[in-house]
Image 1 (tube, rainbow, N blue to C red):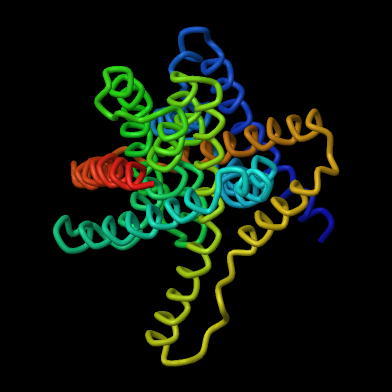
Image 2: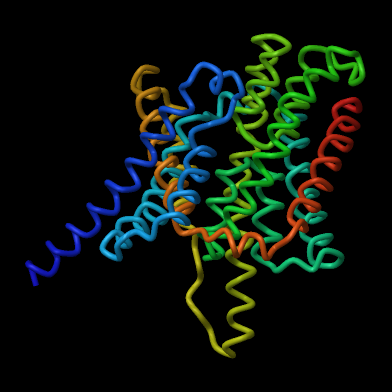
Length: 338
């Protein structure tokens, strides 16, 4: 039995080293001077490299345990550690109006995205939720967390992340441009709230905000991180819904699906709010967290087959475009009302 366990660990190590090499390559690319200016994260590069490697080279089956470990277990740990990026003090600093705004944005975008996707575009349940969550909550991190609850196929996750990258990057460059032209008509605070409440990724919101001022960038990140926090209740509501659907299908009571990593995420936020760790140590943890997320993205990319993504056609991008326009228009209007 000991020999068997050792053999499994050895197989897992091979796969993790394989994924680690892709993650290192992603870091090297994202740190190139011209790439750093785009605001594209190592997570995006990792899933692209993973897809390329996974489709051009069929890795040995002995790598599979390690690849799956990175895509599942490391992902959950990374989402838990993501809590070190936010504190309850930061949430309080932007006021109750920003919190209410974020709640409205997340709930309305999820409902609209899912309804349009299922009714008009005829996308399946998993892809509809993945794309809607990516737009509504926090980009790739939300897609990954949702994927863990849905147990969806890797190619659907990759397609959802592709929409996040496209329209998140577009908004990162377009919004500051329109603000400088006077189209939005926001003050410094309003543009920070607008960016944080509408842009897909945390890094994208930061880049857009700091294009106006350092203070705007700070506000954008805080408002954006409130949306990240809202990922927790969304995951729990979905878990409850799926549990009831499973009970109806099986005609018997089944065990409740609880996304424990979401609980861990909130606990870490609470711990981080106590300021027991130095800022230097928190920075180290956040860097380690990025490494874990990058490895998880690389693993998902390796397991993704391009031919399956092609079968989806343009419908995922149509949905993402609709949600991009919805976020831009509705958040602009709500911020003006504030």
